[in-house]
Amino acid sequence: MIYKTAADWRAAKAKHVLLFGMSGLGKTHASNMLREGGNWFHYSVDYRIGTRYMGEFIADNFKREAMKVPLLRELLMTDSVYISSNITFDNLAPLSTYLGKPGDAARGGLSFAEYGRRLQQHRDAEVAALLDTRHFIARARDLYGYANFVCDSGGSICEVVDPDNPDDPVMQALSEDMLMVWIAGSEAHREELIRRFDRAPKPIYYQPDFLARIWADYLAQSGKGPDAVDPDAFLRFAYAQVLAHRQPRYAAMARWGVTVTAAEIARVTDAAGFTDLIALALDRRQASA
Image (cartoon, rainbow, N blue to C red; front, top):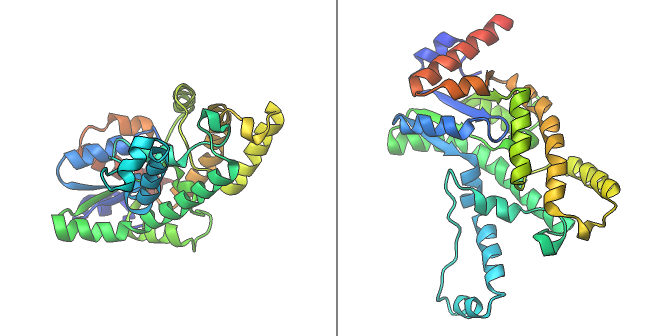
């Protein structure tokens, strides 16, 4: 690990961390708090995915829909309008909208083949965006003068790395430059995440083998053909299974770093409190070694 003890962490002139865990447990909240404190550079993996690596796919999808409208088609064909996404750290809707949901096209669904193609695009983009962190650590230091760096990873990071493989190239690169910090939720957090997702299902990345299994299970249980599936109903069916699927993968990633709880992160109000919490997590790790 880049910091082996709490003393190492506290003494470091440059503090570099990567926050990971399920979406909704405090990664972006903590990252925003550190950035707003003035001394931390905030690198959002999802923002990088949506701008650098999938921005053209997203914009072309908007244009594809606009071309169905005669007036907009004419304006696009004469370069009279400009269409792009407006992704921000706090609004990643263009990315999730492009990723989409499988099922009935009349209800906004994609064919399963197209959905799989977009998931592969996302996987490639996520790996590239994660590997970009080294460049952005240097860029933050050299261009803006930031020594401290927080990487706000996406919830699907555990799907694109193999934390049980000590030679995994992405895990190796990340752990060489940053302290890996798992924000772990409780059972109460899990239930709240499920309730929140049920109210507003959002597109999510699945590993291909896992997706094939739960898709087949849903088709068998619902008795519907692939083109008749309610996309939101499928996402609700899959979400609790995704949480269970990811939990051991996050735990394996945590062996490369430290663990804090979502409740602990929620109590942190400034950079000093964050420094204290990471020091506590390092002490806990050392005590359990």
